[in-house]
Length: 175
Image (tube, rainbow, N blue to C red; front, side):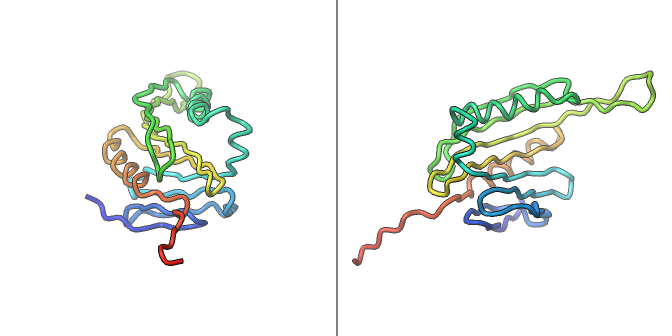
């Protein structure tokens, strides 16, 4: 089992495996951005965030937001096949969330006009949720080769279980 350590920035925190590289998008700020956790085996998990108001203007529901993410993957010209493995409602730090797990097959074109391109399988796990207290939406997604999916799934689950997107309200007993 991997060891984990905390990662904290802009008012949210989670864990990541020790030994994974962390890349913060240089344009990131408190209101929006993304951070990528990269394994030595080239798998990665990304945490993206943005203004909640923006997501609610664009999508009528959290479920629609999650579904649109999958539909955008399907529209990619390199994608040959998308298979929905699982989608379910979960809780993250007291918020309703939508978890999705898909398998994609994409092709890499050959340089020559004749002949078939190679196909590669990948698995993508994603989680979408809205945090009213921080006024942000969060999307967490991970992409990995199919043969590393179980290992990546455990890391993804640990990142989600440890995710804290806002401070709990403190009610002092001595007033």
